[in-house]
Image (cartoon, rainbow, N blue to C red; front, side, top):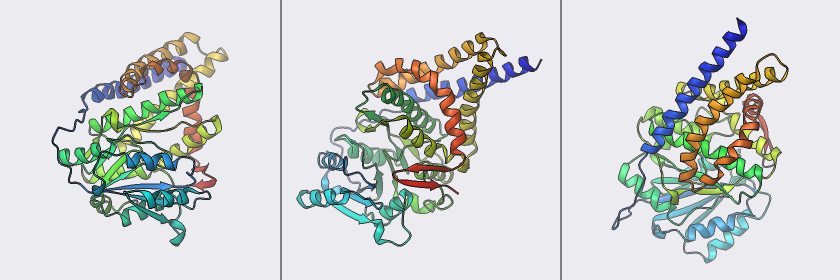
Length: 382
């Protein structure tokens, strides 16, 4: 009787998970494809804010991407906020600034008492920004020439208070990197589709924009200052709560921002534990419920797998459950990867499925401690 009840719980969790994913599969298809019409006149002043720490290896490429933007240089400024870098990041930016037509500002957090960490860097950038719309990316990212134009047009045409954009990986040569690309595509897809459903749950600070006024009206990061990560998602939740219907997902291939996947298993797990560490601080019930459904279906499948291995559960139960989950994930990811131009990577779902269940369970549990190492710092969220 106990086993029958447990199998029923597994089936219910799979049904709930399938409902969540299939709703977002349909919602993604309904997201509008942003198209800038011929003759459109840009008028919005943008402030591009990049919090950086030890990005000397990547920063010059990003600077060149800003130089190549199709958006008028007179309508945007670039603000680099350095979070106590120990390399030549700011020196590279300063050298570039002297020869560029761009308006570039360099800010050092070390000059401000008790300012440290990404939230502080974002906060200081917002304070110094002169634009109406603040656009964010990271120092190790690459942006396409139409990136700022698409953000500005989306703001002028739809008047959202927050715009989330797609992010993907470049230079994915190893199995680990390609599996990350597929897994990350699912996060981007879920985040974009959830915004389309009017239930925003996640976004990525590597490709994000919001108005300075909205940031100030929701009191910025007040209420989650002690959580080192999650500046992007907490703000998304706050803006949606105070201004329902004013978030937007920028669905356009030329709006995709590219970054590097983690090169080692240890760095990958550290990153995911960092992301998971903010889950316990979520306030929105829909966001908590979605996270719980994803965690529970993976936890239950992990338990079923262990029971099948020790002979306490028929192996067919696990095989049937994993096939059901795989089919739903395959359907959803095919659509997202096609948008990203990486549909051929869909078959990396096969090795990903072998590690995904224990990986989600382990990172979720370790993330509850709120302790992790990132960019040479040991962080302990309170």
